[in-house]
Structure formats: structure tokens, C-alpha cells
Length: 425
Ligand code: ATP
Ligand code: MG
Image (cartoon, rainbow, N blue to C red; front, top):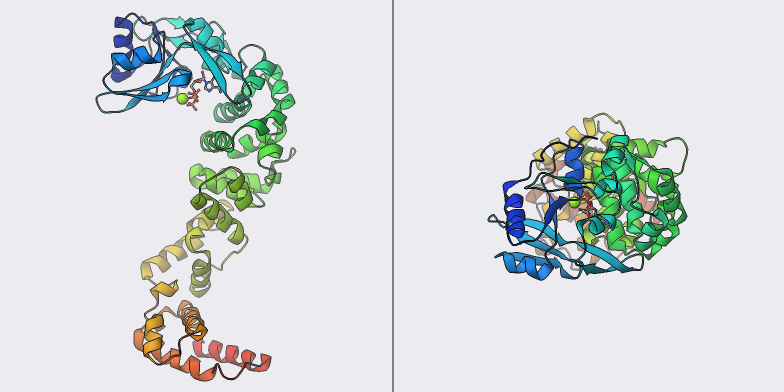
């Protein structure tokens, strides 16, 4: 791949590079933005690699954030307080598969050699417009190949996350993983269990978001052995024909990683908990798992209202899945209409509350909750019933029919139900 004569470096990045160069520190653009620009994708997030030590970097700029001083990374804030990463040329001196101890004071070439893949080890000089590509990353970009820098077995054992990064880039760019790199990844996949859940989650989520097709990422994770280690509930990733579930996952709008993971997992709550997702995300995924097989009849507003009342905050996720499954858009329309109508779907939206029932003479105790539930049930069937007078009247009726003093016989229960239903009908 021939190098373009120049890359469009944003003015703020250029100013930082010029300041460092002006102080005598060699400074290059590196990493993902260089790669993406060579591939023709827009990416203005240029990282800088410099000969200046972190302390020298912080000394040269007014506003900096030490994001990883030990690893040589400082964020320099521009005049709009936007951060730009500046990392000191470094070499890993000790690694254990998840962390590294690094040494500064090395050359650009040494810095490029410690990077993960050849396509991520290309440097561009922002003021001299020069290129450095000692690992022939441009040729691999041209060939659409992901190749580890140096010995892939060693590189993966230094940091197992690199295995997952290879899969992410493959699914994002539609690239092949070079055979030796691939074999080393498969051989060392068991080491993935040493990684922290947070790093794995971030890789998995970024991978799903950026993949051309999420199913491709799942296939790669499956084939390399990563699914087995970290996402065993995603059995649909098994090799062979693309199962229907993966096809549906590819069609879920927005490529939301929480939703896709929830949909693909046989136990979404467990999967998200293992990835140490937030409680909100874990609960969201669990709700998807609970209701995903329940399909309301979009032709029956009452049926849809009952389903919405049950599924609660999972409704939009479930609609997104339903649409991806190829169902017609009627459910989405029905949900929209019900929301616009303001029809009550929760106890809180009823025109009466527990206090009202007590004031109307219903005895304190479980009876109050039971009657409220019954009222909601009826209002879900017929939203017009949601008026204070009607519901209070109905509450007294319900009490009269089922006095607490007489323990209900099964036969009586059934007749009550029939009555309730005929009331609604
Ligand atoms: P993205 O576009 O997804 O941000 P990226 O290549 O920029 O991709 P970053 O995580 O931002 O990925 O890392 C920036 C650069 O740092 C990479 O291009 C690579 O050169 C290097 N790098 C990042 N993580 C590792 C790693 N685990 N091992 C070796 N080099 C790495
Ligand atoms: Mg990046």
C-alpha cells in the first residue's frame, strides 16, 4: 500500500506535536488512527508517541491528566479541554499475560516493535510527513491480514488480551488472521481466563459494536476458544451453519452490545454478571431473557398492554428483537399507540392508591394490595375504567365478593374469575 503524502492531522494534535518537537523530543502519530486513515476510514483520534518522558510531557503543557503514568501515557488537554493521548516510547521489560512493566528511553522502532499487530505499528511524522513502517504493516493492510508483531505465541503470552483484539479487528475490517497468528491464538486461548472481566467485557462490547456483522465476531470467539472460557452460555456460536439466532443478532438495530449479548445468551443474567457489567445492564439483560419468547398478539391492544405491564422497561429491547426476528412492524406501532394513549400500565398509574382504598373503608392488610392488582388487571383490559369513582366502586365490589373471613374454596375462586371476566367482556 503506497503511503499518502500527508495525513489530515487535526490542528490541536499538530500543536501538541510541534510543542514536543520544539522542545527537542521526537514525536510521531501512531496507532489506530494512522491505520484507519490508511484504510480510508475517518478517524481523527490520533495518538502521539514521543521521546519525552511522562514528566517532561506534563511539564510542557498547561493542562494534562496522568492516565497511565507508569505506562507512559499522559492526556494533554487542548484549548477546548479535549484530551489527546501522548505516550512515551517504551518497551515491555516484564509481562505476565495481563500487566506489563515498561521501560522508557527507547527508540521509535523499539516502541513499534512492542505493539500488537503490524497494522497497528505504523508511524507518521506530523510535521515532516515521513513514514516508518519497519514491520511492513502497510503490506498487511493491503493484503487484509492481521499479523502479530514478532513471534505470535510470545506476543499472546505477554498479554492474552491481544487474542481478543485480533478477533475484534478481524470482525471490524473483514480481515483474515494470518495462519501462524491464528494458530497461536487458538493454542493460547486457555490463557484468556487470566484476564480481568473488565478488560474482556470492554473488548467484547467494542467488538460487537464495531463488527461488520456481530455473528462474525461470535464465530471467531467460538473458533478460537474464547466463548468457552468467557461466554459459555452463547452456544449459538458453535461452528457450522449460521444458526437463526445469529442471523437475528445481525439484524438488531443499533448493535447495542448489552442487547446482543442478552439475546444470544441462554442465561443473560449469568453472562453479564460474569463480565462484571453494571447492575442496570445485568438486570436489563436478565429481563430480555425472561420475556424474549413471549410474543404478544399485536392485533389485540389489551394483550399488548398486559405484555407491556409485565415486561416493563424491557419493552423496547424486546420490540427491537422482535423486529429483527422479521416480525411485521405492528407490535412497534401498537406499543407506540399505547404509550401515546397514556393507558395505565403500572399500579402507580391507577386513578386510586392504597390510601384511597383505606379511606373508602377497605381494611388495612394484604387485601389492599390484592384489590389494587385486580383493578390494574381490569384497567389493562379496559383503560377507560381508570377513573377514581369507578375504581373505588369496583374496589368495594371486589371486597364484597371475596370477604377475607371466608377462606375461598377452589370452586368459588373459579366462579369469581368467571365473574371478573364477564364484567370486563
Ligand atoms: P481502536 O480504533 O479500536 O481504538 P486502536 O488500534 O487505536 O483501535 P487502542 O486500544 O486505542 O487500539 O490502542 C492504540 C495502539 O496501542 C494500538 O494501535 C496498538 O499499537 C497499541 N496497543 C493497544 N493495546 C495493545 C496491546 N494490548 N498490546 C500491544 N499493543 C497495544
Ligand atoms: Mg484507539
